[in-house]
Amino acid sequence: MNSPTEKIRAYIVKEVFVRQGEQRFVPDTSEWIMDFRRVCLDPGFLDAYTEAFYERYKDRYPFQVGGMEVAAIPLVSAIIMKMRERGMPISGFFIRKSRKKTGLLKMIEGKLTDDPVILVDDLINNGYTLDRQLAVMTEAKKQTIAFCTVLRFRSLETYQRYFDQGVSIEAFFTLDDLPVALGTRPKQTEPLPKKKFEVKWYFKSPDALLEAVVPKSGVVFDEERLYVGSDCGVLWAINRIDGTAVWQHQIGLGPWGSKRDKQIFSTPVLYQGKLYFGAHDGNIYCVEALTGKRLWVSFEADWVEGAPALSEKKNILYVPTLFGMRGRQGGMVALDVMTGKALFRVRTQAALRGTPLVVDEQEQVYIGGEDGTLFAFDMNDGHTLWTFRSGGAIKDAPIYDSVSQAVIFSSFDGAVYKLDVKTGLLLWKYDIGLANYSAPCLWQDRVFVNSLDKNLYCLDLKTGEKLWSFPARARIFSSPRVYRDRVYFGANDARMYEIDPQTGRQTGFFQAVERITNPVVFDEKTGDFYLQTYANEIYCLREKETKAPEE
Image 1: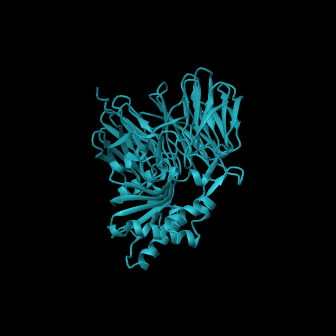
Image 2: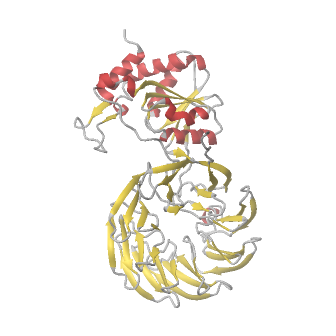
Image 3: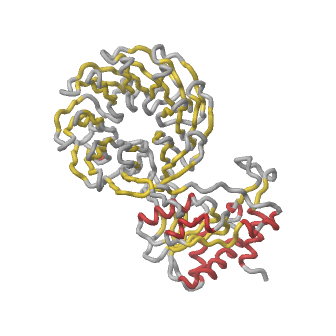
């Protein structure tokens, strides 16, 4: 009679292994794939798998099992039933790829106990899903002792970082066990990206709106403090050394008197020792950066979501405003930074949720609307200089290229546009095909833009031609940023990516737990990275020190 592992091997050879040509799959550059989804609900496979699991781990009882959706769900369920059948009941759970946005908003489904954790999956290649699972387990304060997979693609030395965390990588098979049966050679795999960052400190504001998966208030900083808004209506001042709160400024209730309608999604502007920001209560605030003392309030809108933009040349703050009036939902107000007095107002039919772009040398202000219109306003009196209509909502700020005298923005119609600043005429358009939420970023002769199609795109600044793209593993709401000749962005897989801007190759990463929807912020002086999640978390990160090789 065949052993359980021999039965598993037979399933891999006959059903799991799929060659290109037998069935279409993407990317078509791969010669073959391993499709365990074909057998993950097959009773024969699950019986063989759970027998093999039981024999391997029965002597480590008690423990609990878990894994990430989708493959781990049937595996965990079958293991629980097998262990109960053998008189060793255990608890099981699965981890969502992203926190649920409705109901109880859970990240982990099932019951966690205090027993050691064994994580399970169908295969391991680059360790991407395991990084996420371990981050979730660490946050839940659970000890993971092993990761059990049916198939391991790489050598054990490749996964040394997991052994360093006390997690053994255990597989029933490796690719080296199968080439004769499969009639093919193991895949040639590139080196794994490094986990280059470590946490210096961590801060979390309470009562995050976990159902709102959008960019929220970003951080600004001076020499001593970090400043950021939050979903609970508090503007925080945070000590940059240890992440402790220095002061907090609480705004009032929203326009409907609801505590859940008092968020600060607006990124503050820090200027001459003062902080300027808008809030969902419809007000625009000026507070003292040293103490948090309120200096003035402007009552200009029903809601404010976008960040203010400052003209240092004019000492004017330009703030996008939102209204509940049908047909007149958007606007912009120009405020004197010293007094908060309104200098002029602009009203638009569509809502203006993004941040204005102020270009002092052109004396113009640019802002996009929910109806797809990019407006160019005169910064002195607000009259419209030109408009350009895209095919979808413009969610974030455009950027300015002073060399070519152009503005560049992305749209929900799936395109990136470059326009002449003086006329609004189209210079080029690159069609990605799926909605773009974030703002582009310039570096040398290149434009970087993230898309909800899960890719970072690198475009030629002059022509708009695509140079390369990098595939993340989840939707991307955050805008890319370039620091020290590397591109940084976060995605809904809770991972911060570090990318080489020349080649598009991933050079490093940091794994968080919650979705990352804001741009990564970097301080050139200290070398600190500030990574925010949509759950109102801030990670202060430093690059890990690399040891020089011994002579």
